Image (cartoon, rainbow, N blue to C red; front, side):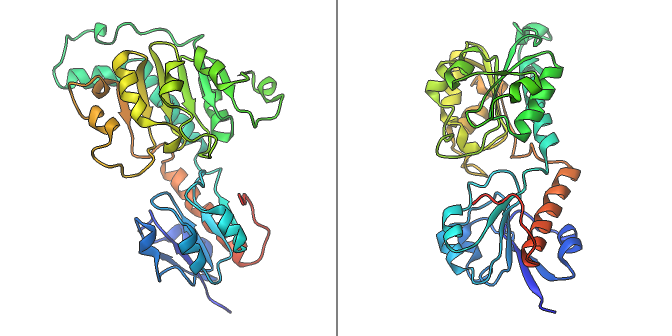
Length: 330
């Protein structure tokens, strides 16, 4: 029997037990643990399938070298780090894994929301370094969440799961998603708004759950933040490029934003001198107490990571065996 080859380009660097459990009878599985596309040269060309995470992107140079690849699977929801159009021109399907960490990302979005809106992060940050009194007044005024507008940009799987959690907190959930069919709002008991400006104008919390496309790149920038109510909150567990992060520190300093939760950045790891990180690390800057930064961890749980790996491997198996593919994005 022909022995196939599956290459995991990045992120995974352990014994590959989940992947080998799925693929071991038909394929050799190799992990490169690369951090840049250039590191793939000469190591990926003969792959029958490629598994890609989020530490690097695959463009024309790499795709041109793939001589027998039957599938590139982006092990995750976002697929903006693959040149899907060129891959299709080369006859290579690109798929994603959209159903591995829905609960975890939604939980993380709500966790960031609560940490910010209830003052939990601010209290801990200030008290830990001995700043200010031992008093609730450090975060005053905090307002009740019930009835406040929780605005969602992108009501897909994760956006829907987040909406359900926000509803459980008694929040008034509104969403903007021009690609969502009519009637979904009725089924879920949430409100649809017709424009992004309408959502921004009323949202106490804006939570992003959209893919990164030309349409959504920097969908939240300085002009968008200016349309939000004073003292509102921003949470991004979607894709780093959806928010112009340089707009956050000025919005925090002016009081336009009372807090921001950032799980994803455009480049990861980010440069140390990124304006947001510089402000976030400076105890003298309001961002120190009012911004939470996580290392693209919203998806993570033991179960979620295992699901992502197994589902990615199962996609490769289907491609290698000539079975119908799922979740093709090109």
